Amino acid sequence: MLPPWAARSSARTTQSNVQTNSFKEIKATEGQLKACEFLRTFWLGIMVISVVVLIPCFWHRHIVSGDLASHTYNAWLVRLVKEGRAPGLWVKPIWNNVLFDWMLSGFTSLFGFGLGEKIAVSLAVLVLFWGVFAFVYAISRAVPWTLLPAMAMVAYGWTFQIGLFNYYLSIGLSFMALSILCAARGWKRLYALAATPLIFLAHPLGVAWFLGASLYILLLDTVPERFAVHLPAAAGLFLILVHKFMWLRLTVNNTGGSLGFYKISGLDQLILYGHRYKPLAVGLFLFVVACLFVDVMGRRRKQALSWRWSLPFQLYVVVELAVLLFPDYVRLPRYTSAITLLLQRLGLVAAILAIAWLGTLRKRVWHLAGFGLFASVFFFFLYQDTARINSMENRAEQLVGELPFGTRVLATTYQPPGTAVNWFNVLDRVCIGRCFAFGNYEAASGQFRLRALPGNGIVTTGVQDSVDIESGNYIVKPQDLPIYQVYQCSPRISDLCIRKLEAGEKNDRLGIHP
Image (cartoon, rainbow, N blue to C red):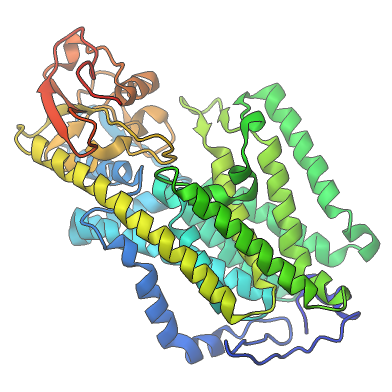
């Protein structure tokens, strides 16, 4: 039996429920995935694929991933709070945007901060990667071997590199739950809802996506066919109402007018550390278009296309409407800092839905070869760029290692043109056990579990102060002393120096910024 959302269209097709090809596609029967059978058959392949997918987590001494360093550093501060060694700091019990931080605290307490961080990140990567795999499997009813390289690129794309791991984890969990919803029938679909609390612990935006997508899937399955074709328009109308509410009731920043092709399509997940990623993204886009064109031309009956493409295509269109209508920045009354990068976060969902759409195509060997080639170039670029940032962090570690324990330190770093991923947190991880990264943003933002009282001497409590420290425009206050600045003393990104600051001076007065 075909998926629930495809049942009506399937009556018009003569397509077989079972296909055999070189990739050993496994078709589901009775609306359920044969998960146990799949695991028994391919357990060795799953283990090998998992090991290969995790290579970028271990190919350098440190995982280069933007805010990851901040998360790990704050896990250390939380430990100091619990030990009574961080006066002025406290841990607030919260129930969202915290799951990955709990994982970090648990694994680092067991295995140390180096290995513990890698284990926590590896688990998050596997949740997202196999969550996407399960969703594509549930949609296409065929094992998506040919799309493994594309899934790996998305797993290490912009969201990973920026370090939004609570959100990243929530999206992986949500797609795992959606795969259950797409595969099951009747009351068994309620199993998918069991993941909602876990998704909420990771990030509330993941819950919003999961519940919205679940509602859409259920409506597509239950409403009469003559109304189902209008569901994207209905979803678009709802998004317009949300847009109006946000602009009238909340403080927002609209970047919709400056959105480029990459953000609209979801290819922004591949634009990372410089301009050379853009031709790669364009080439991948053209390859995807070729895959779609060949598949369309190879099918004589349009009815055979409709149900296979319907769900992922419609969800992709709805997400793209959200990208066009939503702001990039929104300030909520309960937080001292704004929720930012909303559109880029949606880019991860769009990229996954694009992969699910590709999963409905007829599998061909050249698909795997093409995606494999693009993935090879992508990870080659990524290895080079993250190696340079690793060298910067190693240099920063040498500099702060000479300071007495508990010294307050600031850092301002230069990022080359075309870089879409920041590495402002280069100081955070190296301060663990050594110093205090005074400009760390988490406590000041009010969005995380660690909170700080004014005058604590460990971390700033002002959001603007944190921003100014990162940009090099912070004016040192007398109560900050003694305090040091890590800065770039040449255009080479790994060439860092350190100096003691004086009250009244701008923190990055001597930094080199080409």
